[in-house]
Image (tube, rainbow, N blue to C red; front, side):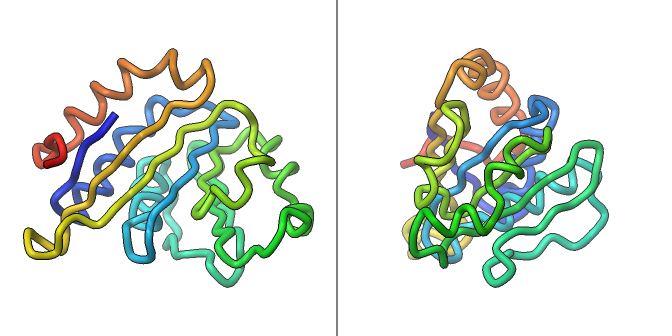
Length: 167
């Protein structure tokens, strides 16, 4: 599944559109260069979940948890050097918490994730076109995400009028 957004608000809207489809225990793996929009995406999701706290990048804290209609764990594993540090982060406990878990730079810990997750790769578009355009590639991994594929496509299609196929 490919799409793009043309604004920060569009990226937040795409995340918010995902909220009604989420289930306790869902894992979202967010990949992309620095500044691609991983935290902005998580902010939109948190707002849709009813989180009232300010959501910031957990780059230096590694993990933050927020309370909303469903608990949200937001992890940034960019600074982890090896999988042993995953144990220090208590990733297995966070995954068993019936919360939604967003993992920035999740490819670092992909071997420790359940075999059912949504992977979003976010890329910056050509800066000559616009600095705000983000290209998204969604990979549905596992049966629960494949079962929601049509609903997910519909939700994202209607999330923001700026959603169009990538160039």
